[in-house]
Structures are given as C-alpha cells and as structure tokens.
Image: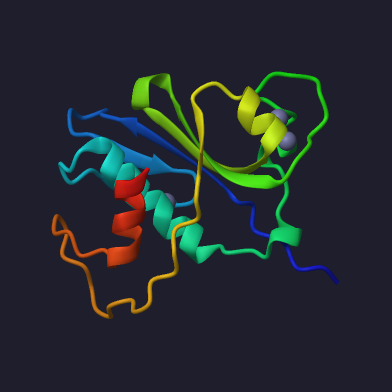
Length: 147
Ligand SMILES: [Zn+2]
Ligand SMILES: [Zn+2]
Ligand SMILES: [Zn+2]
C-alpha cells in the first residue's frame, strides 16, 4: 500500500465577480474574500500556509511542471537538476503558482522565481485569527517580506 504523496503545487487566482476581490485557491474548497492587504502579500501568506502544511522530504518531491506535461515551460526537454520551490506570477498578477519544479523547468518558465522554503514557525499561536488582522506567525511573514 502506498500513501498518496501530496502534490506540492498550488494555484491561486484572483477574481472579482461581485466587485470585491476573491482569492480562489486550488487547495481550498471555498474562495476567500481578500482583506485589502496588498495583493501579493496576501497571496504569499496564503501560499506559505500551504507549504508549511505539506512539507515533504526532498526525495519524495517531484517536478510539478513535469506532472503537468510541462504546461508551464512549454519545452520538450527532460527534467534536470535539483528540485526548487518556484513561484510563478502569471496573468498580470491574477494567477499565481507555487510548486516544486526542477531547475531545468524553473529556468524555462516565464516569470518564475526560485524561492526558499518558508521556515517552520517555532510557535503557532492557538486560537482563531480575526479576519483582517495580521496575526500570522512571524516567520512566514518574514518569508513573505524576503521574496
Ligand atoms: Zn488555499
Ligand atoms: Zn517542465
Ligand atoms: Zn522539470
């Protein structure tokens, strides 16, 4: 029996069907209304949470571009190099992908930037977060700032 390996690729799209921006995430079933923070910050904080939830040892990671038949880089060459966590900003900031890809794919994908893994929060604060308030753990915040 094999355990399903979580696919380390997330896509966020921003739309505003009712005039208010909504953040739709491939991992979350419900669209999230955006809080009014600068878009990139909010997208990155959302993505950071998913990365932290789905840590995988390096040998279990696969090139997520390859998993999609290289739909992101549109080349025919084989994968090569180490796996990187790559942030792709597409569609003028309305679509964001964060995924593990190999170096060869990452360099061929337009608007892709290799980012480092967000650090594991040393202490995750218990309790509900108030909507609109910035109470993410400090470390992902710093991770967001450094991108
Ligand atoms: Zn999500
Ligand atoms: Zn590829
Ligand atoms: Zn690849």
